[in-house]
Each structure stands twice: as structure tokens, then as C-alpha cells.
Image (cartoon, rainbow, N blue to C red):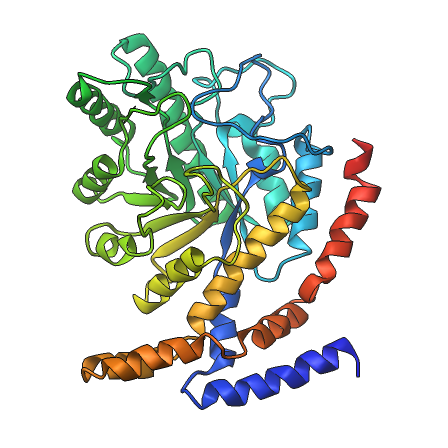
Length: 418
């Protein structure tokens, strides 16, 4: 029996098993196909970008490891992303940071960037059947320091306000070009290493900066704002905390970004979904894996990721929650890291979509809590992996561990020669 025949047979058995608990797996696969993951470009090159400013790193960002073969230019990065897309099913998006523009070897400071520096990306994305998302970049610049949008120095603050305004306009042009809203994420590392006295002042400045940045409403882009618990060398105080952005997002009706690595390890990011959906228009997720807080390890099929996906599905919020990835591991094959992270995130959402939710809701409404708990536990053993293999087969991508050999071949043919 061929592998595809075995997958087909296993799928038919799984279909009957899931039908017994009221789950239509064909419908679940249609929904999974429609979940677009915003793939972060910065895993391919360790968050270096393609500027020509001679800036150093910093600002709470650090990729660790020295695995050979990282992308060194736009062409190599596009090649790597194209390869990644052959390893995963579904239609996805590409998330760019502002430092990844096509600057043509010229020096273009961040308060001078415009849409012309991203036409190469827009055209390539169209040819690749991808939609683009975007990020302003506050780190790794001579004017980054500890404070950007919250800096008391008006000249520095104005520099970053102008940069972020331009990023929103670039996002608007991307959205027009692709006929689909470009989601622009705003995260700044602003904070302090040690005890901070004027916390209120810096948050007041950040609020004022954001008000100026968001003064113009656009139709082809969506804003999201991202918090963080603390940054490298900024451990004691973060201006843009979760409380700050939750309040600002609710007040201004902005999308809030939940990064799984930006909270205390004991916090449940999944539990925040149902609350945020009541008070903000939409949610952006950055799916990552903190090992020691925000270490940005490659996303795996962990309980935390599964719980996150389940909360989205249980809230009937697939159309209101956007899914992106954010990790940068330079210690392993970067293409392989992408494949693991994307496939693991898809597996989590598949498990969520295969949950016998109607019966579970019925039990809960009737106060049948033993039955609810028992079914939740038994559902863990249902043959979701047979459905996953079928999804891969129908998507014409590697089934099971077969993608390992594809990644190895690409390394042999392409990345090892860089």
C-alpha cells in the first residue's frame, strides 16, 4: 500500500470516529485552509535587514546562534520564503519589518522611507500569491537608545513619529496594491534597565506620540499595537506594557497584539482572548515559544499553543483573530525552523477545529461538568494526526517527517553555498 493510500484509508477511519462525536472533519479542513499565517521574514536573516546605515543591534532584540546559510539580500530571502511555502499547506502572508526595504545600496534613513522602497516586495508577493503585513522598526539604530516614541528629547521622538507615520503610509499602499488590508504592527522597546521614577511621564509621552501617529485614518491598512514584559538591558520598566496597550487599544479601538513570549511564563495568553474580543475590534497573535521568557524559540505543538488556538475557535473568532509568527533561532537550519513553526501552529488550529465543541457546550449549559471533563480528556486521543496527514496530502506538501529531507536538500543545493 502506498503512503497516499494509507493516508486516505486512515482519513476515512478518522472521519467515522469524529462523526461519532459530532465533528465534520471536511468542514474543519475547509476552515484550516482559510487560516492564513503571517510568516515573519526575520527568521531567514537573524533580524539584520537590508539597510546601509551601519547601525548596531540592540533595543531588546537578539538572535543567538551562528548556523550557516542565512539570507544576505532580498533575493536570497525571497528564495528561502518560496521554499518554505512548498513545505506547508494553505495560503499565507509575509510579514516585513521596515528595515527590509529595497534601498538599492543607497543610504535611506528611517524617517525617509516610503512605498517605493517596497515595490519589489509588493510585486514579488503578487507573483507568489502572498499578502504582505508590515512593522515599524525602532531597534538597531543610532537614535534607538532606551527610549524612542517615549523619549523626552523632542527631536528623537519626532524622528520616530515620522518613521512610524511613514510605515503606516507604506502599509496603506501595500493594502491598495494587494486589494487586502495590510496589518501594521507597532512595537517599541522603550524602557529602562533599573528603577524608574517618571513612569507616568514616559507613558504620557508614548500616548501623545501614538495619537499623532494615528491621526490619519486609512482604509487599506489595519493598526495593531504590541506590548512586552521587558527587554534585554531594559529589564525593570517597559513603557508599552500590556496594561498600557490594552487601555489604549480599547479607548482608540485599535487591534492589540498578543505575543506569547511577552508575558510572564505563568500567565495564560489564551485566557486573554475572550476578554480582548469584547473591547477591541480584532486581535493579532504572535505565536512563539518562550523557554526563559522571551527567548523566541521555534513554535512547537505545545499545550500553550493548542490552548491559544482552542480559545480562538471556541469564541467563534477565526475572522477576528489574525495569526502571525515571531521567533528567530539562528542555531538551527532556518528553513527547517520556519517549517516546524508553521506546521505546528496549523496542527494546533486543526486540533481546535476538530474539538467536539457542540457536545461540550451542551454539557456545560446543562451543568454536566463530569461529562464535559471526560469528553475533553477523551478528545485528546482522537485521530487528529490522520486528518493532518490528509491535509498535507491534499495540499501536495510533505507528509509527516518527509519535509526533513526537503530541507536538507535545499541546504545542500542553496544555503550551504552562501
